Length: 244
Image (cartoon, rainbow, N blue to C red; front, side):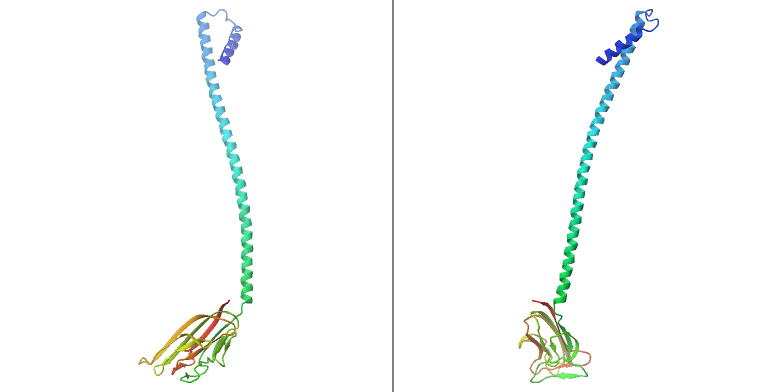
């Protein structure tokens, strides 16, 4: 109200300076004062509204500043995470390159040992029955070392796990099949007894742990016989899985 009183006194002072003010009667003067008071009250209400708006502006400015601060903090955190991701990606790439080098080095250093052969290298062949029951596979499909095609014996050159597989074909006049031998001991076999079905074919496989110098070969059953021709029915194969 201090502002209103001050404004009213100012208006009164201006009014006394107006021409004909002294001649106005009392009622006109009272009406004039009431109008001025109402004007002053309206002005004060508008000033209060303005003060409220100003407070809202200050509050909004404070919230905006807080939002800017939070966004700045989040941007710093995002930048930090991006840098960590870049560093992690570089370390991951370096690790993958090192693994690839190790794989290439291991593949280069590991001995390449494999062979595959069948019994007949020309025409038909019946093997057995005989006192020397070792099967000698003459037709070589591949041999990177270890298999002796003159004796039919594979000799391990390094300690490791080796995979062997074989197939046998025979007619019903004799026992058909063969035995996988390791250092003279039976490991696995195929076996078909004399029957009325004409012929039989069988196969088997195993992973053997061998020490350098161990010998593996195929052997007939007693009174056994197997058959082969250029079609390669009776076969023997093996390879090094990995050294140990």
